[in-house]
Image 1 (cartoon, helix red, strand yellow):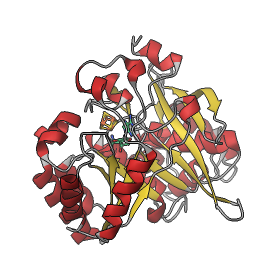
Image 2 (spheres, rainbow, N blue to C red):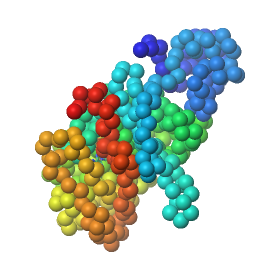
Image 3 (tube, rainbow, N blue to C red):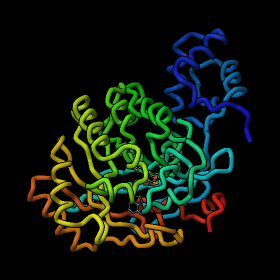
Length: 364
Ligand code: SAH
Ligand code: SF4
C-alpha cells in the first residue's frame, strides 16, 4: 500500500502551499490541476509545461490515482458495471449507462452512477448496499477517479453524473462537496451543474446547507413513502429527519437555488401505492416545482434480508402506469424510470452483488 498522499485530495490552498514551499510560481497550481482533471494524466512527467525537477518533487510526494479498476461487466442493454479496488482492500462500484434517442437511436447521453461510500450506514429496508453495512467514506479523489478511470477505459466523455451508487452522499458531506467543486469548476469545463444530480435519502440539515454552497447541482430526494410510518419502516433515517423536516429543507433548497427537485419513488405493491398516497404525493410535489420518478423495486432477495425486506414486492408495469397517470392528472410531471443492468446486478440498489464485494464484506 502506498504511503504517498493522493494529489487530488489537496485543496487549492494545500497545493499553493506545496508550490510555495518548493519556490515555484503560483500559476503552477492551475497547470497541475488542468493536467489532472482535463488532460487526465497518469504520470507527472506528462505535464510538459513545468520543470523536470519540480515534476520529480511531485512524483516523490504524491500519487495520481486513488483507486483501480478490478473487474468490468457489460450488460446486454449497453450498461457497464465497474468494480474498483480502494487502497485499503475495500471495494466500490460504479455503473455506466448509455441513453439513446428513441427515434434515430443516436447516443444522447452517457451517465455514470458513482459511489460516495464503501457500503452505507443508512440501511434502507430495500437496498442491497445498505445490507452491507458501513465500511468508510470515500475521499474526494476516490469519488472523482471513478469518472476519470471510466472515461479512460471506455475512451469516451461521460456527459452526466448521478451520485446514486453506493452510499449516502450527505453523510459524507465534505468530500461530496469537494468532488463537486472540481467537477463543476469552470476552469476545467468537466460538467455543467445541470448535468450532475446528487441523490439523498433525506439528510435535512445538509440539504439546507447545500442550498447555499457555491455551486449547487440537481437534487433527487429518495422519498419512497408519503407518511412517516411507512417511511420510518423503509428508511430508518426518517426517524431522525421526518417528512415535515425533510420538506422544509427541500423548500430551503428550492428557494435558494431555483432548481426543481426530483422525487424518487419505488412503487411497492400494497405498501405505498394507494389513492391516499397519490393525494399525499401530489401535495408534497406541489410544495416546490418538482417531478416524480417512479422506480420498479429491484429484487434483493439474494441478500437473505431479515425483517421488512422479505415482504417487499414491486408493483408491476401496469400498476406503475396507472399510478403515474393519476399523478400526471394532478399536474405532477411523472416518468417511470428505466432500469439498467438488471442482468449484471447493476441496477439501482443492487450494488453489492459482485463476488469480490461480497467477500470483502463477509457477505454470503
Ligand atoms: N444514498 C442515496 C443515493 C444512493 S441510492 C439515496 O438513497 O438516495 C440510489 C437510489 O437507488 C435511491 O433512490 C434508492 O432509494 C434507490 N434504491 C435503493 N435500493 C433499491 C432497490 N432495491 N430497487 C430500486 N431502487 C433502489
Ligand atoms: Fe444507503 Fe441510499 Fe441504499 Fe439507503 S438507499 S441504504 S441511503 S445507498
